[in-house]
Length: 113
Image (tube, rainbow, N blue to C red; front, side, top):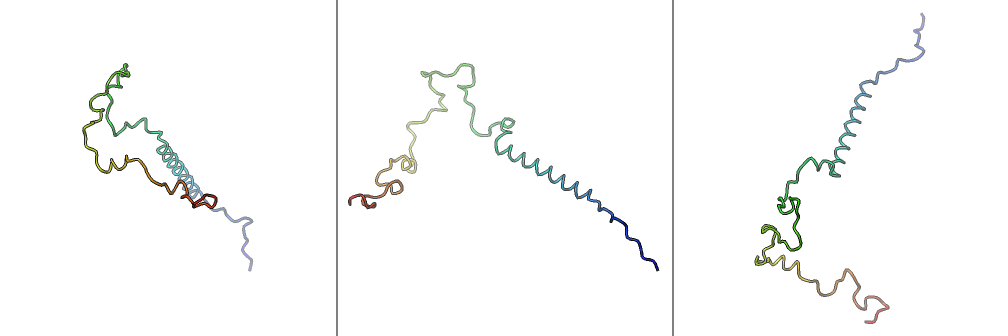
């Protein structure tokens, strides 16, 4: 009985499908990363108009308002409007000690009580 001959080198496996899948996944990932960074840094903002606010008709023409011109009624605040308690509290000046900025007197050994 004779032994079967072993080939000198085993046959190479065909990895074409695997390599194509890895390449496609790499390209898709690179494109997704590029789009995400473009959105993050606002590179597409010039193609999309602003969705909030309104037009400023006094700034649209070639002539701009001077220091003696008044703003359009829509842009002027109402001085007779009531101020809510929360707004009044938010605008109140800070008084009293600020414990986060400085130590209390006598809190440091070198300072007298």
